[in-house]
Length: 211
Image 1: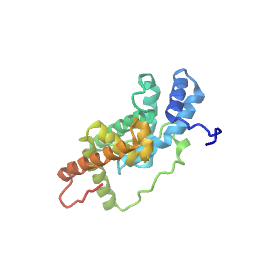
Image 2: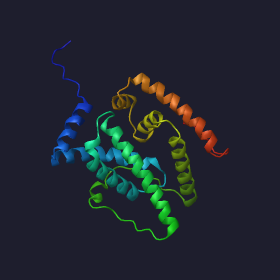
Image 3: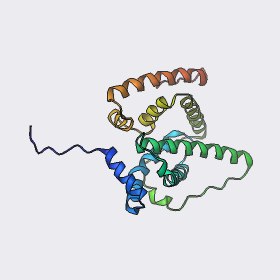
């Protein structure tokens, strides 16, 4: 074999170095971290609920990265940065959804884009254009799926979210969770079985739910 083979890059190490620079107040490092992970967070958030529009996604992502800036010092590296980021994004999405529902029940709702949101409007998010009936049905399905996911153990919810919401490959999930790819495949299969079992109890009988 040739001795000139290029070394395989280690994304975890690269992120660790980038995060350390951010902790030292390096503005360029913050820009690099934002540019790398904003699209990841945006796609993840957009797929969490069928009733999130583009503007909702932007606002949730802005709140997510504000939380990252404030709490990066608490990140200990026990999971990958992306896993930590997506957990924050999921929490912010649930907060946003709860707040939106409360405001709709309570009266007027003023929606606005946070400063800088227009810089990321070119993120390629899938279209969900549909009629009112389909939109309501999709929103209800998204709510029920989230309810099912919330009943899973953290390790199950994490691997499913990374695979289907984060759109990561088995190899990428293995790297994120520091697992063998075969372990990822086995865990995902078992967790989907558990999710289906929970869904059969939550979804109405006429609704077929299989993942």
